[in-house]
Structure formats: structure tokens, C-alpha cells
Image (cartoon, rainbow, N blue to C red; front, side, top):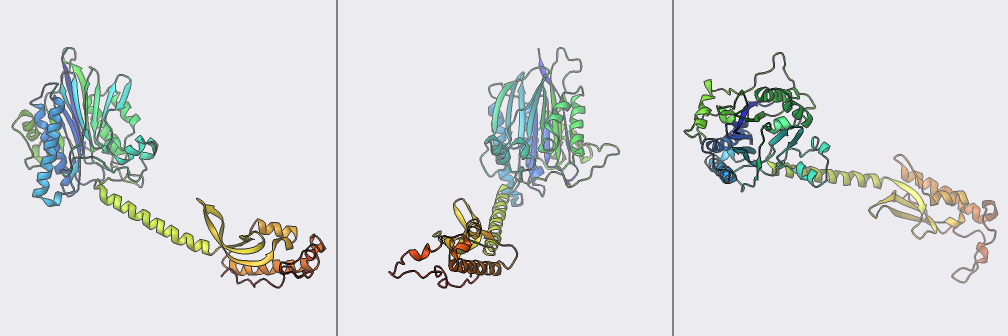
Length: 460
């Protein structure tokens, strides 16, 4: 049994972007997708450099034992080339790219991955993503802080934690596995995976369509979903050349920015390198998808956010916004609390008091402060008034200090009436006059708590 690949690669600018920053390559032994970022031509340069650096591996395939090392060396070389390009053109300092690539040697498959482009595998009835996104939201999912459903609406869903940018050391994921006849692989940029659901991707891959039709169909679905980003798809079937009547694909395919750019970008004098030139008749992108006849997608308010991967300005902006919101919340919260008044038991629990704030606490922090102890004794009030004060008397509107003054005056008058006639208020008659005062003099009936309390100032 001789294992080989039948493949197709397509890239589309999408519905909202002016240029294509994605690049991809598909050959007999190498499949790769790169999603560039940086703007001002930086993204397309970065992705084209990454793909062009890997292309020679398709002509000089290393042995199974050397595949991972060869991929790692090529990725490090791409990162070095990016750094050199930035030194030559400082305006490109923000450029970078993702990269997902698979190198084949018989049934052995070596994969290298950095960023949030993805690889999927359909094997019989089993389907799944075989790469791990290097994004902030994926880290939050892994830590159980958010769910998979929350990723699509998270404000930092496009924030990359790893990429090829020429500024930092490359830290890709590498793996090696065994392919089987009948396997179908998909490599794609997040312009596809971020718009088309996993279930739809699976159903499309599982259809009886050819690899060429599947790749076109997936890009069409992403455009129908709004096409907010560049869209790239590489689809490959694993076949047995001894039994498959159609046979493997022979001609390499270079698509996206790597095909569009006219400047030399590590293009070797090899069949793969010459294929890059052959795929550029008239300087156009031969793999650029034609629009579906009669279909003109229009962006709407639900279009997913177009990503930027210069992460530190986003983090700084986020922190500034949080600080401003916290400051505004504290300011308006303080103003609100300072405008609220209520009446309740004094701090010693004996008298009626006026408080500013609300009768509650947050994390042990009291949201009210006593501004006046009126001197009106709670035990000098009838049970109904005493219960009302104990349960706090709140006010509404803008003139809460005036309302508090009025209510305190009413309570003071009621306390004076009760002091003069305890029985009418349901208080023990003469109980207060039997208690000796602390200064040694006898208490005068009807004077307890009356005439000695300061007048309320409305809580100020």
C-alpha cells in the first residue's frame, strides 16, 4: 500500500477586507496555512515569508525521524527572516503570522503549529480539532473560567499569545502521528473557523464532495456568514494509490499573499518554487474564490469583530477602560450614598439617630455613617414608632435631609407626649421616675429624654 494525498487549497479576501493577508501551500508532502497580521502590507509579508520558508521541504522530504526537526528549523528560519525584514523596514515592526503545517512521509505525519489557525481531522465517524489555539480565550476555557459558548462574544477573543513575529523566540506545538487511508484533513485560518460552526465544518467534510468542492464550499459558507476576515482552506484526502482510481494530486498550489506578492520571498529553484510562479498568471491570485453568482454579502451589526494581534495596546486600553469605569463607579456611587438618609437606632442602640448612606454593607464595609444622635430614647417611644425606627425609616426624592428633619421632629414630639403620659403610649407608668439619676438627684416625671437633645440639623 502506497499512501498519498489528494488536495486542494483556496484563499479568499472575504467581504470586509481590502487585501489578503492569508497564505497557504498544498503539495504532495506539505500542507500549510499562515494568517498574517500587522496591516500596511505587514500581514501579507509575514505570512508569505512563513509559507515560502517551508516550501522547500516539499521537494526535499526528510526521513520520518528528521521531520519534526526539519519543520522546527524551517519555522525558526522564518522567524529570523521576519526579524531581518523588520530591521530593513521598521514600518513593519508590528507584523506577524500564525502557522499550521503538516509534513508527510508515507503514513507518518509531523505537524507544527503556532497561533490560532487550525487543523481538523475527519476519520470515519470521528471528527475533531487536532491543534490547540494559542489565544487568551482558549487559556480561559482550559482553566475553566469561561465556557466554549462564551468564546464567541468575549472582548479579547482575538488576542493571540503566540505567533511568528521576529521579536520573540518561537514556541510552536509539535507532534507526530500516523495517517490512515480515508482520512480527510482541513487546515484553515480563523476567517473560516471563527465564522462557520464546528458542526457545519464536520458535515461539509463528511459529504461526498471532492476536496476541491469541499474547500470552495467552506469558503462560500464563511462569506455567507459575513466574511469579516480573510478565509483560507486546505483540504486533503489520504488515499491508497494502488486502489484509488483518481490518484493523488501532483501539482503544488500556492494561494493567498504568498502567491500575490511579486517580490522574491525565499522562492527556491525547485518544482514547488516554480509552481509558485506558474500559479500567478497575470499577477493575480488564481486560487482567489469567485463570488457566488447572484450573491453579494453585506456586513451587518452581527459581523464578528475584525481582529488585531498587537496585544499590548489592547491590554493597556482594557486596563485604562477598567480604571475609568472603576473611578466613575466610585464617584457616582459616593454621590448617591451621600444623598441618601435614613433614621435608625443610634450606634449605642439607645436613641434615635440620623444616618447618611444606605442600610447595608458590602464585604464587611458599612455603606452608612451616623451623622446625628438625636437624643430621643427608643424606650420612650410607643411600640409602633420604636419598631419603625428599629427597622429603619427611609426617604425618597431629592430633599431627604428635610424629610429627616420633619420625621425627627415628629418623633421628638411623640416622645415628649409619652413622657408626659406614659400609659397613653403603652409605657410602664412611673417607671422612669423610680430610677435614681446618676448624679444622685431624683428623676422628674415626664422629663426623661426631653429638652436635653440637640436639635437635628438634617444630617449635615
